[in-house]
Length: 280
Image 1: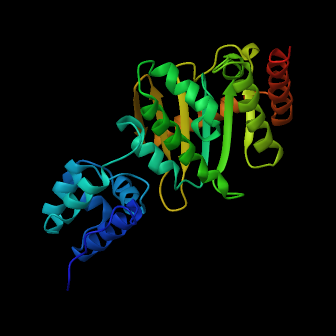
Image 2 (image 1 turned 120 degrees about the vertical axis):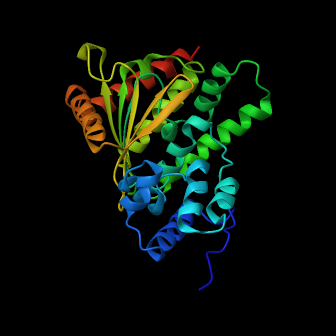
């Protein structure tokens, strides 16, 4: 029986690598847990690789080739697919985000990337990279806007975002940029494309004061949690109790936040205030 063919990274997403992995594993007579054991990962992790919700890292690809006798197939394709337009700490999360059926996110400082306008994203990147060339900033903005195309579908993925009030009050890029950025969020909410809530300053202390939180659910794979800090980020899926704890955190944030209608009113009010700042 012929072995799996090398894939063209420009036209073959990780899901195709995952399908080849499932084929090779089943052909070897191994369960997901049995393949995961020598890799020191869970069976659910192997399932996520096969579903295309997790990136196959080179260290695992080399071992899988040895275990499944696939003659370097996964190593070669892993190297080809490793190139990403996103920072290393976020690349895997961005790829998972693109195939998620639901995304729930708490943003403590910035408008979430999926909801940013071009001008807002440019101001964020310029603030974080004051000496970068214009070309570098353009590439970063383009990559961020490309991510937002997941919202082109009218219903999937479900996006539920909780914004800390600080997100609204921090004047990123100036008053006009903020007015447009908040107006964009309000427009998405009024079109019922997203669920948006604001966690007001008056809510006081809460469980996510340590940083941002993104929860992603999938049709055919276990959920993931992504935690991000300054120049760092990590995906969590095991043990399952860890993700459950993060889901509880998000539920409590929702309970402490303003209702969606109250949040929309506040967002539009702050946007209007920014607009007035620009008037003579």
